Image 1 (cartoon, rainbow, N blue to C red):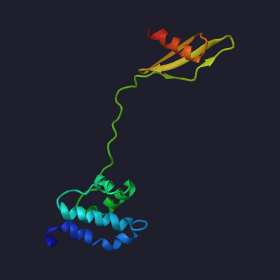
Image 2 (image 1 turned 90 degrees about the vertical axis):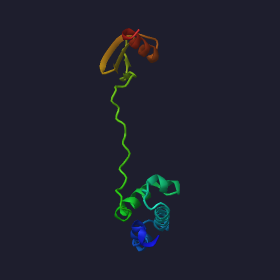
Image 3 (image 1 turned 30 degrees about the vertical axis):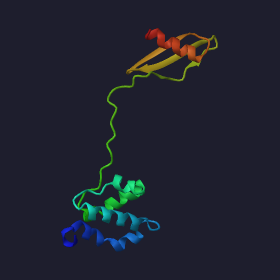
Image 4 (image 1 turned 60 degrees about the vertical axis):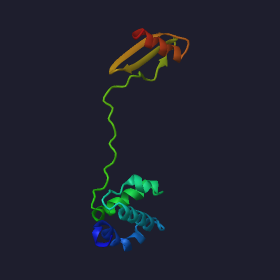
Length: 138
């Protein structure tokens, strides 16, 4: 492909810098893999997932793609977007419940943005929590 593949030529100019890029020969190996991808598919992006599939770890692939972004004529991959939870949790969140000396339980919990409190008799913590829930949602 020679002069037709500018990206490959730009990568080849970085060959000498790859010896010190990573421990052992990882820098050289990832660079050779990227050059092969660019040689076969001159117009395609080189991605983290392609390099991961060849056995390279995530930190190395990200560092390599950032280092070679200009030669590859591509922007480094942005981190994946994490979906933000927009709806409130549908499960109650109980605070630490405690038992008074007279055997009554104090149970507090939050559900759908509201706080609830219950005081009553129960044999154990589990039953106290169940009764607290049922007092409001039965």
